[in-house]
Length: 255
Image (cartoon, rainbow, N blue to C red):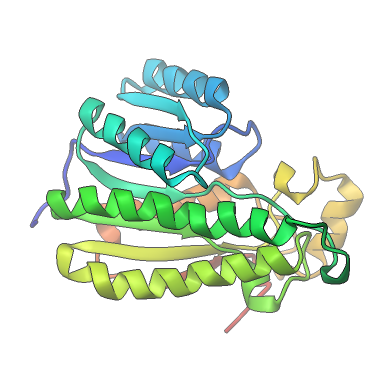
C-alpha cells in the first residue's frame, strides 16, 4: 500500500488505568485521529474511556472488557471490533502485570501468572490482529518491553517480569521477519522507570529521586513520554523501522 490509511483503527490493550501508559496512549492516538479499539480486563472503565474519547475527539472508539490471557476472548473481541470500526492498522500491546517478589520467594503460580499476561497475552492479541492487518496490507505493531529485560531487573519488578519482557523483544524480532512481506512493521519500546501504578503505587518524591539517580536526564519518565514514542512507531513516518527495541529510559541503558 503506497499511502497510509486516513480511516484507520488502533487496538490498545491495558487502557483502563487512570495513571497508566495505555490510557495516555489512547488519548494521544485519539488526538491524532485514530479510531480506537480499547481492551482491558476492567470493562466498565475502558468502555467509559472509549465513550469519553469519542465525544472529545470525534473519533470512533469502542472499549471492551477482555482478559488478554484468554485467547478465545481476545479473538471474539477483535472479531467484534473489526465489524464496528475502520480497518485495523495499529496495535499497541500495553497490558501487563508487575511482579516484585524475589526469585527465591516466588509464590506458587506467580511465574505462570506473569507469563500468561505479559507474554502469552501479547501473542494472543498480536496473532489475531496481524491476521486482520494482512488483509489490509499495512500494519504497525508496538509492544511494551522494559529496561528490566535488558538489565536483568533492577527496577521494581524482578525475574518473571524481566523474562517475559525479554521474550517480547525476541517475539518482536521474529514477527518483524515474518510479517514484513505483508507491509507490517513490528517494534518494541523499553521504558525505564515511569511514574505509573505498576511501579507499586503512586511514587513518592523520595522514590522518584532514588530512581532518577540512575537516569542521565535526571528524572523519572512520564506516561506521555512513552505514549509519544508509541504514536511515532504506529504512524506513517516509521515505515522503515522494524524489528527494533526503542529505549525510552532517559539514558538508563545504552547498548
